[in-house]
Image (tube, rainbow, N blue to C red; front, side, top):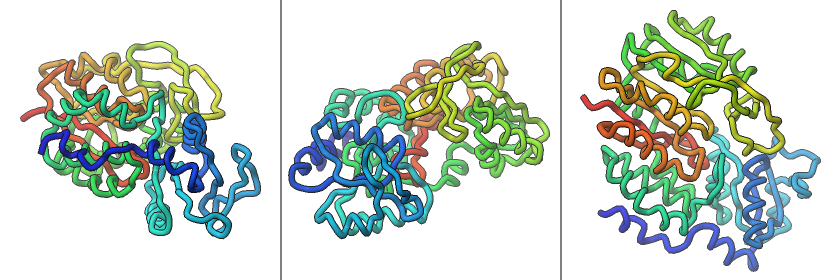
Length: 366
């Protein structure tokens, strides 16, 4: 079936549906934080009023969020009827996802796709205006799972329906065993190494007789990474308290002491600071595998690794996060394939609401 025909059943995006329903049915947010901030602003711009906000029972506090009192779900049910629930936070915790599924059986529920960084909604207008670029990437994908996942994730981004996320997800182990395929004595670069969790994940498949270059700009995260390096059993591991970037120098950075520290001010209430940055090409001229999860700076990191990617004697396999910016679904693969066009391209999504933990894989052809 053609790429276009797979979207025959989608005539409206979630925002259009909410606009039509808002004058008749209450709109209720599940969750607080950055996601809720962005969703409230988008809805307000479309003239849609939020009627209530609830949180998981353990997160309910006697405080205001955007002038809303945070309620228990049971309290919202007792005073509102036939309401629409919008999930406004991200999670991969099984017990939380099960609760979301439970709520979806009782109410019409959506998990809006809003950009983690940057601007632009992946709505029907955006889909149509970028259709040819998305179709090109779809046709470049190297297996049926990638194509199915790509279509399902786009359907999710348009509709906010979590069923599409579940339909398109795969297990992390599948991506390592069948796509990325780490091997002993390989060289691995981890951009956005956080506390060492993705290095640990990589070495579960490669073994610990590897060489690792790990970059993490956040100071508190780097302390955790340093502790990991002391006890992980990897002899050849080099740590950099730098942001990966297109060149070396200083850049603005917004620290959250967690996974979402970034060089973008997209997060609310985070102070700007300056951190040193370095490009991958300045660190080494060889790598077998590079993982890039740079919180919206993926394109800059790729630009700083152009030499090592282009090198005919190296051509590392790449795993690159595809969910931080609205345009990532086509802009990231376009950029890499413009550097060299002889990669096999794969796409995977692991269990997460919304469509986070989604990656492109660029694999060296054997």
